[in-house]
Length: 268
Image (cartoon, rainbow, N blue to C red; front, top):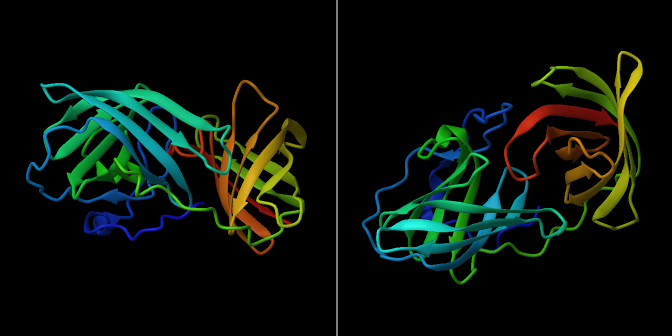
């Protein structure tokens, strides 16, 4: 996914890889967290404005914007937008509310995601977890925001591999019904393009269980794709291409939400 032009500040060097995510409906994968938020003396009294930066969720980076309105009691209301610059049709947008004590920001949204951040050096840096503040062991995304947008992501990395062909393997659904499917992934990609289309077929006990069209993006060797023809459930796949193998996870929510319910491995 897109990269950040600037090096992470000292705060972000405290990032640690941690254990699995705790979400309401299915276990996800915590890609990172912060062991402790470093003590910071109160440096600012008001966060009013629009803060823009980068949200990193493992192999991908997304543009994130947080609009904040802070009242005299330090209560916060606002809005968070997460945008995929390579796939602008997929945008997360939701209201948030919380508090700011002059150093630590805590806001949450209705789906159960909690944003914790420390204010320092004109930036808000922190993590997102399901169901709780101050729980880095459940953190699945890291973000840094500034009011001037200086932490926004840069131009995307061009594709490093050609995905064209038929890929076959398995999809292991390790939550919900916990089923093991045979999986066929067919991809069509124009030469040099970051975009591709195709189809997914999931077979259970020799019978086609589900079949749908897909659209996707590849950046470097990181790939993501989603179904475009089903309405009841949307599948969002993310993975890494290694030669003639793609391995990764699937979410029923979105690319940038740490809510994986299964994993896949296919070979060409």
